[in-house]
Amino acid sequence: MKGLKVLVADDEQVIRELFTKFLGSRGYTVSTAVDGLDAMEKIKRGDYNMLLLDLKMPRMGGMEVLSSIKEIRKDIIIIVITGYASIDTAKEAIRLGCFDYITKPLDIEETEAVIRNAFEVKRHDDEKKKYQELARLRERFAVETEKRKVEELAALNEELSWSNEELSRLKTDLEQRVDERTVELREAKTELEQRVIGLEKFNRVVVNRELRMIELKQRVMELEDQIAKRGNSGPWPGTNRDSQQEGQ
Image 1 (cartoon, rainbow, N blue to C red):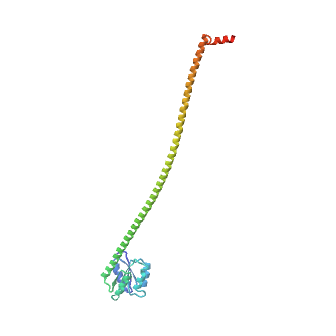
Image 2: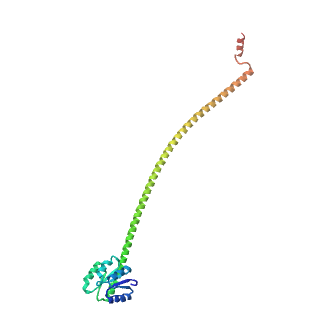
């Protein structure tokens, strides 16, 4: 229990000294208050873990302190000190938020057990609160993580949807271009085929002309041969008769 700070609020000096000696020997750091007002002031200034509070004190009684202290320190452990005649009041104090009560005359062993049990319960309560807070944080983290995953998945789906739309648009555009290019190639093919046909026709005409020219050349050569032969052998047939007719 070393380091735990206890404030003893009792108007009886004997009780204050008893708790100071007894709790000090157990490792607690002990402070005292002579009445309720003194206790309130010291609680406002000090970081106490426990308040041992006598119900019957001058200026401000224990019940009044109990009603006000929770507004200042909700986590402080309060154990009331009462006489046999005020046990009902002590039970009412428990209802208002104190942990337990001890009766006068004090039983040291019982008092130590109550104080030790109070700190043990407080420790378990603190651990429980920490566990609950940790569980809450884990749950919140899990929820936020799941939410973030859902958002990321939604964003990914949206991106994929956009990608699919873009791919569909690109596919449509590509198909349109292919169709247009196919039409152009078909038209070019038709034009080329027509040109080939025209060239074939022109080639046939040229070939026919060349053949005709060859024939004409051969005919001219034949005629030249005949002329040459006739020149060497005398006049052409019918030449003398024509001359005689001109003389008459």
